[in-house]
Amino acid sequence: MKYVVLFFLAVMLVSCYEVERNCTDFKTGHYFSEINIDDSIFKSEFNRNDTLQVETYQGKVDSSEVRWVNDCEVIFRTINPKNRIERKDIHLKILTTTDSSYTFEYSYVGEDLKQKGTAYRANK
Image (tube, rainbow, N blue to C red):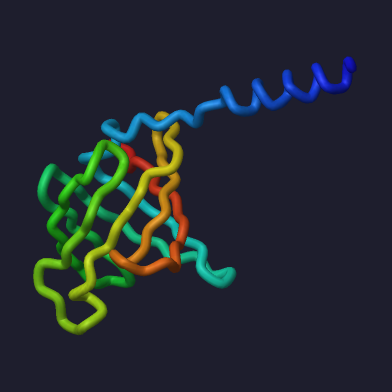
């Protein structure tokens, strides 16, 4: 009987755990991001305000319109797409936050394949 009680206590403790997400702290600012794909790290730097994100990746600058779906989810639309892939909107969801970073997952809108990464607030 005491094992049943311990089991229910353990389940209750785990189910009460809530991941910290202060997403509104990261809606605007200057950031660096890292994404690990197939054991390779891809880094970029970006500035974001309420309506625009300007990102530098491998020496190329790209601008996207920003539309927040809720406090933790955003849709990016490339402003001047150069090919079919760039015409696809990107959905990003913030999964966890700290005081200076957030972990996120993203995918093309409507696609199941998701990638994960971390963005770090740049020093001012």
